Image 1 (cartoon, rainbow, N blue to C red):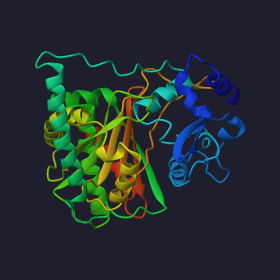
Image 2 (image 1 turned 90 degrees about the vertical axis):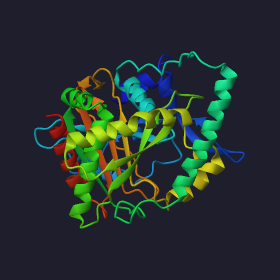
Image 3 (image 1 turned 60 degrees about the vertical axis):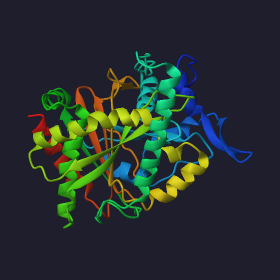
Length: 375
């Protein structure tokens, strides 16, 4: 595996992989990239001997609170021996600065054998007012929307539950999967998308987690949902933010899906037009955002869904059978759900503050709801 990855890192036809040969350093008060030859003896290695064979969820939970060393490129590939009769697992961990979302999928494709997915195509010009008029109108809309989004973050709009609060040092991770084709068909019949179906299932799973803890269930659960944006300036994590209020008062999964689909149609376009969150566009703004995020009462969970590789991946000649995306939780939000389509399946990961929610219970309910929607 080390020899294979070393050859790929030196392949000039895969520019995405150059990110794995750089580290972040401070220069003149700024964070900059610096070339750094990775030591593959460290970067590609066996998981810690104390990890039980096949325990991917437990290992991922422990890794989510273990920082990557700052003196080398911030990524690692851990081989996890399988339980009796089971194939081995792998954990590919990369810092958010390297890539996120769609860019992370392209990075994995370049590293594990598939052709990278094409970048977002340029947006064609539309008929209508002259370009400068459209730009001025868009500028005013972005200003108004930006002020509203920042103001919404600082106002309290969600009641007190275990979903919000300081994040502890103990994490929980759980996996769920469902066949993609029937789920997509069900979503289409309800006038929605696979992402809408995921949100509908997440709503029920979060309610189950709250009830298991004896917590009150708010009428809606506001979720922060990333929306992919065209990559720019070499950024590997350019995303907009869509806020979706997930209803908790609708027991019928299909009706819940239809309601969510109706609310997300306009929200997606608005999120793409607004771009990245206003406070995260500058270094100082990001620091303000980090402080506000630890006290905000505007969203109670993160839900992200990324289209996976178009073809199956292989590692050292062995096919990768399943893939789950594990993404961080941050601020004061104790529940995160991430999904990835791969080999005809929608693979989902639950990441929680273990002291607040039982990740295995929430993942089990998510699996049940997705199966219910898929028929």
